[in-house]
Image 1 (tube, helix red, strand yellow):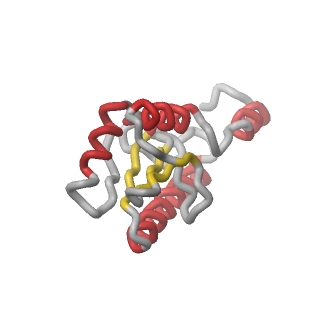
Image 2 (cartoon, helix red, strand yellow):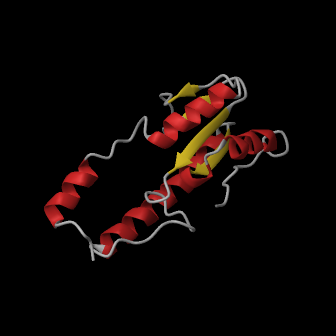
Length: 139
């Protein structure tokens, strides 16, 4: 059972923004600390969180709730069918975007927000030299 009334939950959810969230700011700060040249929120297909233009790498930070992290996602008690369909659509779109970006010649890094640490990102960037496929990460 949700601890908030329906109107309050709706108000809370409406305040969630799509850009410059805490995980995205953390990604920016980590890349900056690693001295990796990047652009945040480039205007390109799939709306990646960051692009390393010279290396043709795009990075997505997938929120544990919005993208259905296998470790942290919990289906809300209310409106379960809506949320289940919503998360499934998000995951399907993520797969399609990843596939298309690879076909466009980009390498794709996808990190869960719970994985966002300097060590995780450094490891993901290092793996790029080993593979041309997506780095989907695991929790």
